[in-house]
Amino acid sequence: MFSVVNQANSVVHRDLQQWSQIATASVNQAIENDSPLRRRIEVNANVISDLLLEALVSPEDFRGVRDDRGNLQAGAIVIDMDDHLFVEYLVTAPWNVTQDSPLSVKKAATALMAQLALESDTNGHFGRILLYAIPDAIEFYQKIGFIETGEGSPNAPEMELTIAAARRLINRQT
Image (cartoon, rainbow, N blue to C red; front, top):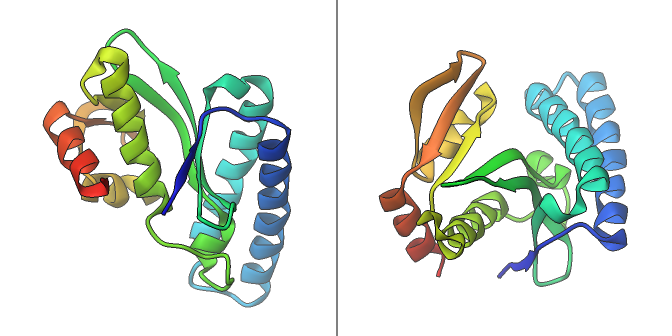
């Protein structure tokens, strides 16, 4: 259902700029309509902005997934560390937050995390991934197998996809 994007090129940059424009419009609409999704939409727009900048600066660190129609549906900035992958940013396309577009899909971020677990395994880290989660994303990470390590801060706890959890995530996605 998804294909993997292993670095940011001009097509990815164009897609991320489109995401940013759509996210900004979604924020404005959420404010005008006093949407219950307003906070999620604002957070999504902020992370998209950060991801776009990082993809321009370090295109080799970008990972993403495209749907079967070729639409970029989720993206991340990933750094290969000594014994794990570190996810600096992970975000889904803005239409996946608002769910009001024919472009909307489900499970794009989960599919991307499964691909990252596979990359971590291929790189000799046995699927291990670390990240600092924003509060709005903790539940998502827990659902796919991440646990809090006790490090980080209350506003950005460190979370780990353990080797066993990585195996389960990879097996569910294949």
